[in-house]
Image (cartoon, rainbow, N blue to C red):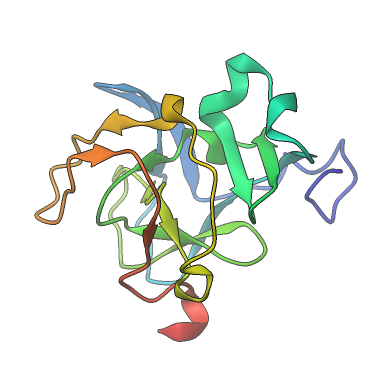
Length: 161
């Protein structure tokens, strides 16, 4: 299954106010222009797999968990959005990446990789140890080691602002 309302040959042609570039850790996504709060900057699009074992090894770091038992192999530029413990973007229910605050042109776009929604607290979510890493986001709220899911501590999407 593919997440997109457009035909496969059209889905990656949309113009978003973001671009892939490099930072000191590798590739990242940055704002192409000044952005306001609630601006759509990208969309997670790709193939949905029913079983984590089917995720190709070279795609593990780009696999997006969809609920507790499906995974998206992200094919859009959203695959280059990096983690921050205090992110400046969030992912809405339609997999659009939306800014949480005004951003300047050239600013890196970030999401929190390990957050789950409060209503899912207590559910069991699979965490692959290969996803774990030491965070270098520099946030005052940086938790240091990203090695498990945590519950949201902020508004989850634009409708809650």
